[in-house]
Length: 267
Image (cartoon, rainbow, N blue to C red; front, side, top):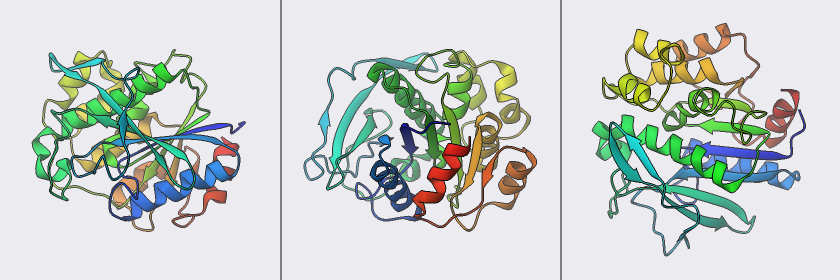
């Protein structure tokens, strides 16, 4: 595969959030790809704890304004952007007052308001895909990292399968040590059906329960390739990934951009 454009969809990116394995890995791999001449764009949620003034975020009016319907309720999509210095990497933020609140707490909404995590994940995933369409920017590889991105491979391979922005893209999904407790709303499958996702595409979800393991399995079902991005991964998820027979990159280290680049090129 010719690797010319790479899209990173991540749950966290440093320095907009405090350093974590996921946030630092995403930044280092994305900037590493850019240093290799790949055109890179990144997306993450605009959590309320992100200081817009300090991080120089500004709204992109031409990309904002779309209403995303979830469970028969419209939610306005707001797109903000910042430039990560000194690399000048563009980072886009998915924002909405219903799912990402303005507050001073350092805790993320995924932890403070877990009851909304099913719709938050749907909104974030749809927001990313719709924004990439508006950008008229066609990535050759899409890399999803973090459980909040787990619906992206399924959406791209079903609802947006024939869209020219995605029909030639290869999707990689990261296995991470980012497990959450409990389950998402039991109506997650129903809400996905309401936005046009066919029943066969979410069979893994309807056959199981909407927890962390099932979300990862759903992403594995629909991605083209898998990366073990942390040394420790849920053993059931790892076994499911290996049993899928899909191309898989074993843990290459937390910032080995060269290994990621070679893996993408092999797809």
